[in-house]
Amino acid sequence: MYRALFDLVLSRLDPERAHHLAFVVIRALPAVGLGGVARRFTAPDPSLAVEALGLRFDSPFGVAAGFDKDGEGVLGLGALGFGHVEVGTITAQPQPGNGKPRLFRLIPDRAVINRMGFNNRGLEAFAARLARRGPGVVAANIGANKESADRIGDYVTGLQRLWGLCDYFTVNISSPNTPGLRALQSRANLDELAGRIAEARRALADGQTYPIFLKVAPDLSDREIRDIAETALAHHINGIIVANTTVERPDDLRAEHRGETGGLSGAPLMARSTQVLRRFHEAGGDLALIGAGGVASGADAYAKIRAGACAVQLYTALVYEGPSLVKRIKRDLAERLRADGFHSLIEARQAA
Image: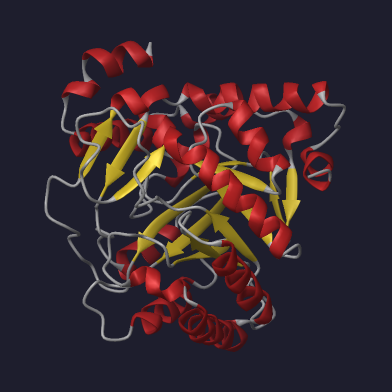
């Protein structure tokens, strides 16, 4: 039914407007009393439960940052069956993002190009919403303002303001839509960033600490992967989310908007992001890994787990497949585990 709705209605709307309309529905689920019903309908197989870094996910399957930039739909997204919800990217000060149009569907390629530019309403409003977020594993994805004089200071400010309001933090250093941001992935810059983040966490950790992840690009060389893994481990960063959108454009893209600038996400990213995930698993065995990029099926999610991920995330596939995709992926993932003789996802990951 959703695919028919997409083909007949949503695909004809401006992508940002279509997203807004879908988000209105998701936000409304708890308000009209359907949150609990939806949650029971999407309850996962017990074999999909995962424990990592002191967190328990009832399934490894989460929604990536970008879908809910301002933390407005946490309860609704949880009701759809996601095992965790990552909200943001949030910046210290509100900012409008880049000029429109800035979001483009590549329908034949099952992909999206965006150059949103961290549009959000700012840290204070975000913190107020997280304080009322309800149950479930919720992460805050923090970034830097485009015009900031101290971008690393922006990350520290985000960590300090949101401490105690979420279950883990993601430090987004890989969006291609804020000029110069990806330079923070270089060894020298990342060493300074991770050092200041670690210092802030030590000052905040009054008997309670939270895992911190870095979100990296898929456009990394093997040397850059090793450098990031080593720097993260040296500063006690807990994990890596692999990966953000890519600035590369595969030759086989067919859609009209394939030449637009911005980050490409969706199906064309699956193979490359999984390869980079596997490289991080080899380079930093003590780092918890979350696989993102191109996940659109149980097979995709399983490939990420077998490459070393303890959890997976999606966003773009929801545009094309709708909310029932979450239940289908979890069912397929459980069936693939049983077919390969695994009793849990932990066993499958350990065999990676």
